[in-house]
View 1 (tube, protein in one colour):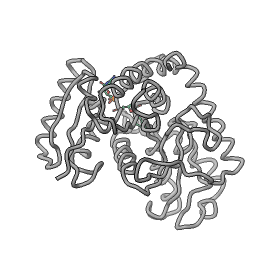
View 2 (view 1 turned 45 degrees about the horizontal axis):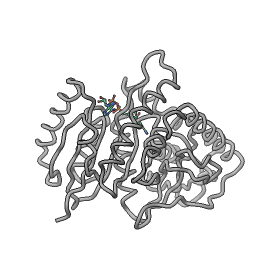
View 3 (view 1 turned 90 degrees about the vertical axis):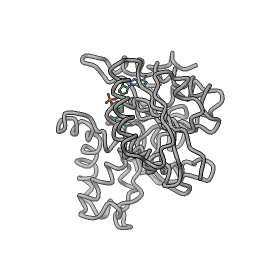
Length: 325
Ligand code: NAX
């Protein structure tokens, strides 16, 4: 029997948390033989902590054989103590009339505190997956607080955008999602992100041969870029099950050597991104970590889109400059 992994989830009583925890506890994130201890972290507000008690009751009622324990807390030191993975889902939603700069700064402060707590208290092998928005910049802020945990262990989630792109391409081409490959997201998790359809393949053929260029440059990009808003308009609440599913894919991919997927990581200048920003890039998992897939050919249209999403990431970095050491 493997010894349990400690997995922290912030925002554990939120929508995504509710769709996520049961999948981690059932073994879908770390595999069918890997026990887990869940560290459930919420804000120190009675309503949230009370809701969390209910979630823990439901976890108990699932009698998951792999769930070796739960820790419920609003204290970051206790929450991140000895964790091997930290899934940072919780963040402050944008309120009415709130400027984007204020949202960046308010959430940035959360990630300063959590970045420090992870660096001080997590296990030496800790890896971090940021979901809470603005996810790329939050990951950059969290990583910047660290002295012990290397910055490349901080990732942010763009896998939902990748899954959305794959779903749209398959639907349009009338094929199974399994026939759509090489679909990568470049840049920010925001409407500026670029699903690089020029690299995608459908049934082993370039997507650009299978589907119309005007669809790919127009409706496809618009649908994927605005999917989150479309779900809010239809459901009255933001994506939760698909976001939790994407996080399971993101982490599962990062612990499975040889997997290639879109992950927001410190760009180090790949594909023309500013070296200091966290950008969605195609990433291959290795035995010890991951490497950015290099050498993919991008056309002038793709380069223009990447320059635009890079500019947004650079401007987010400038907005939160006072939170960076
Ligand atoms: P909810 O508002 O349902 O839940 C968020 C939870 O986080 C709340 O229970 C809140 O009390 C808690 N929380 C807030 N600050 C916290 C802190 N400092 N420590 C611990 N817990 C804290 O939101 P939900 O729908 O679950 O979405 C969570 C985040 O995911 C949002 O920021 C959202 O924008 C982001 N998303 C990111 C996606 C991505 O692809 N990267 C897609 C889905 C989602 O929109």
